[in-house]
Length: 290
Image (cartoon, rainbow, N blue to C red; front, side):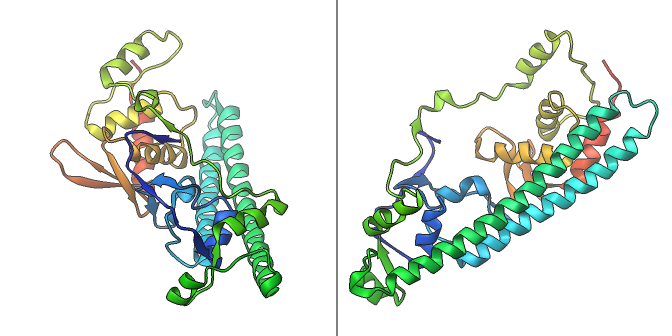
């Protein structure tokens, strides 16, 4: 969804290139109203923001390859975390060994399914592209109508959106429909202040709290995530941190290579990588119980 106080762009183009037409059939570049800022990292736009792309940043094949590379990277991370979970479970004092192993294995399976998902989406994209070209080869009999002026101007075939929408319905795909709904910003999930979290944690009799000796903006964010996340891993915590990028009040500012960037109270930007995050999680787990 799009919140009313988020900056958006309007796309009223009446025709798109063949690659863009395939992307729209996949659900990308969706609707006339989209977020102006699309979050990116080393693998390009994050999957959640593909519907908000104004145009493709790379050739379609490159986008799909990067998405698959992201899934493989996250799968490798999950396998590594699973090995760590096995070592943890070998400790006879680990009373929660079964739940730790189950959580790690579930993450491995989830990430493996993501690889399968992007492989299938790539096959679907290839099939859509082939069928679009096959339909265009019918020339005057084609249901897909070419925007000749834009085609001549750009040097690449552009298909009229209305004809693409009508033609795509045979595949159960609707392209021209409402954008993601606009909602009032007061309906955003509210991020608690540190003081509010302290009160909430104090009033939760079944929750075990820990005392952190050092404290900064990032520590506050990590504490709020780690205190409620069962069996935290670097991958899962990093995913939660990336969700905070769009929150203007968060110290997490943007994605970075293999991590996120955050800003301390002095306005200095720092990078938190997966490796550093693993160390922070380990440090938090070793803190004395309150």
